[in-house]
Image (cartoon, rainbow, N blue to C red):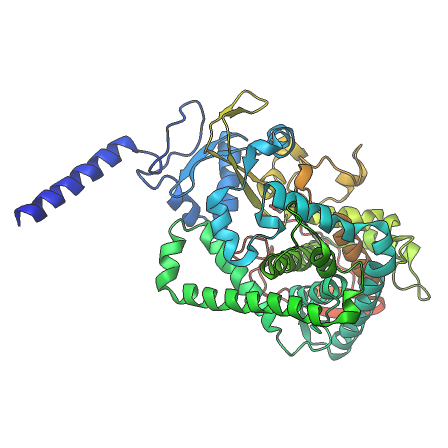
Length: 511
Ligand code: HEM
């Protein structure tokens, strides 16, 4: 009894000590009186501030940016102190000038490892350099001409057929789901010579896609739950996560095994799997099957989800802004025709207004909305703010896209012309427009995704017009994920353009 009482008193004493030591911040963090930021609670810092926000972390960071400016600070249990770098100068410093000084860190590595393993998204240092160098071979002009364009054309034709059926039947269509099917089919063919048949068998749910979506959702939840590694041991979600990760891992292994047994496919020098199978690491060894599997899965995430979400947000914004859609269709009609209904490789770059519309959708709905790095060695930002080793920096492209200090008074308005009228045009400053990331880790697939999205939207919008079915939330809610999918289906009616009714008033509500 006496021992129990002594332990209880000891624990109480420890709790009081911790409460006094960390009165407004998460446990283990040092105070930063030189920085502003939302006051936190004892021991858990700003954890509840994030959870009380419907849009979670991104809205919390946005509100912090509005109230305290681009370099504010907050704390979270498990993550420690986080300093925001929501301005182009600081982002450039972290992502380029002192590139070697910041990494994603052990905590994020562990959080993402079940799904991303040691693939390109989740590695730093030599492993990253090797994967980046090899991956970049896929994106050369020759490949664009010889493989990528042909696959996009073939898949675009399938999309046009599907839309034709929906226009005739008058049934509602989930546009977001269709874009996910399109990008997975196109990407599977280009990178692994594999047809997932998502477009040709629309009623047959692709288990791989379902598992993938589930794991993305859980990764999103993990970002907002510092205790995920414990809670997932006991929850249904945790159990399912382990099952789905196992399925994905076996799926990736199967791709590698099939390839090893397919002598014909092994001869294709441009295929991503082959590229990596033949590659040598710095120590001269070949990659293991496990390493190859991680690379395959990372590529699917990169190629499927991102572009499908960009297309969904672009279409939503066009439906909400008919005058912009009208300008885009005018451009389409000036370059495409009955005889040439799909853009050729040669003219795809001429769809400047369409590309600007895609970038504007990504400016306001960046598919990687939030990002973090851990500081390895004490550092100073260009504006004199010190960052100490172990502290995290955080930038939120979603919040930066809405900041008038960066984008001017109309920051929250959907206006593709801002790209065309600016000096940089369609090559915007990557530290201001960070939707494709920035610095040496800028997205390798930017041109790939741009070409895919422009080819598809121009062919589709020349012939069809979408109308949102009534009763849906505008703008759509975000699903919990590490990327930015819509929470609910994007339901539309499809009309042949010639008979479509013309709407007049733009609805630019975006927040
Ligand atoms: C609209 C479409 C896309 C957007 C907005 C986008 C955006 C991004 C972002 C923000 C990152 C950085 C992620 C991070 O590590 O935090 C990234 C990295 C990457 N993206 Fe994309 N991406 C798109 C499409 C694609 C496509 C289609 C591919 C492949 C064909 C691709 C390949 C990659 C690769 C390989 C990386 C890793 C780069 C590295 O860490 O060195 N992306 N992308």
